[in-house]
Length: 80
Image 1 (cartoon, rainbow, N blue to C red):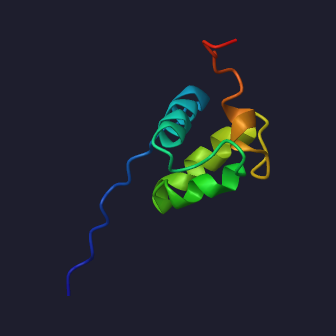
Image 2: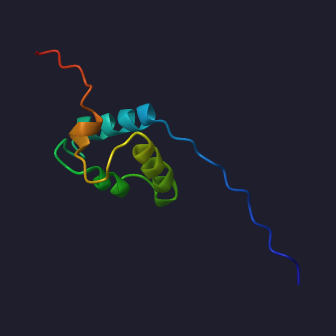
């Protein structure tokens, strides 16, 4: 009986800016709205990657119950 080999896991690093970019993309596509809570994002981010995203949101002091708009609030509006 041979020992099972376990493939090394790659550690994916997330920055809050990368997360914001992805969220803006989801908003532009109409997949999510700015009024939805941040925990909605877990439906669109692979489960194996969600923990990294969740940790980065927490480091940036966002709560999963905060709205998506809170995350992308620094968006510049050209009509203003």
